[in-house]
Image (cartoon, rainbow, N blue to C red; front, side, top):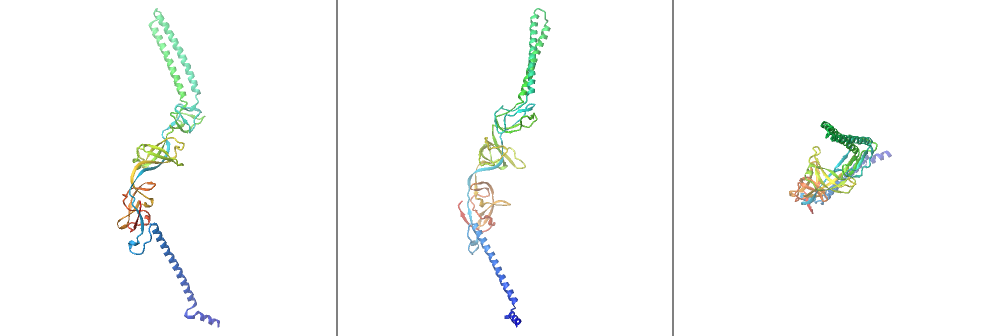
Length: 396
């Protein structure tokens, strides 16, 4: 009885139970698909709304093609006069660096009275070298001078006596000539001995290393007890007068736009303090590998200016007239920098440009624009060349 009832229920209305269950599963699957499709359409609508928001306009109502064109903010930049500034990296160095070494035969260092960071005057003693041997040699030579003087005095006395006797006929003219030559030789030996003593004293004086000019000591490479000589490396490096400079590296085009005497501002790395200087020399040659030259900027001494340190120079290069655009209007790709200008029939046209310096108001365009064009201000990255737009002008 129960088995028959189950069979009847399965074939009720002519539809088996398993087939009815499959229909229900297919119905629920179609519902999920419609939900997914709806989510995709909603996402597309959000993307379109974001596109028009970034383009500075609103979604266009459904209609003809012009009504569907995006509204894009444009600007007529015109031209303006800006102060030319060239920024260049470089290093700090002493303007006139003096390497100081041993000029004599050298010896053992007795004392070093100065250190790096000291100021020295011209002729000041930097290093004292042991001169005990030279002192004894000078003393011996001084004694030789006394011996030569004694010989010269004796020769002069003999000559004087001979001159008194020659009138009486006791001494011949030949003897007088011989005594005169002896006296002259003795006097010459005195002069030779005196010259040798002066040489010894000069050699001893050269054992003291002296400052060749007044300046600021940058390096000290010698210590007491060290043995130094004529072939030793420089014992000191001195910045003459404490004057510094910056060696700014510039491209050949930038170098050609500068002249000696222009004002520059130098900011050492690690500080925001600027130091004023002037370009005093421009490199007469260009490095064939880097295509760069050097502009030497003279600077006064300051503790923050340390030779060997990096710095950035801002060099005035005069004034120029150019178009200045906000950074949002200037795009770039593998072909270079470009902007979109509004062409005929309100189409977006690509225009290649050459950019210059970056100012507080934007990027200077030195080639490619006259300033009278309508330039897309924003959303240029979403446009394609030839695309129809609705320009909305904004004040420059």
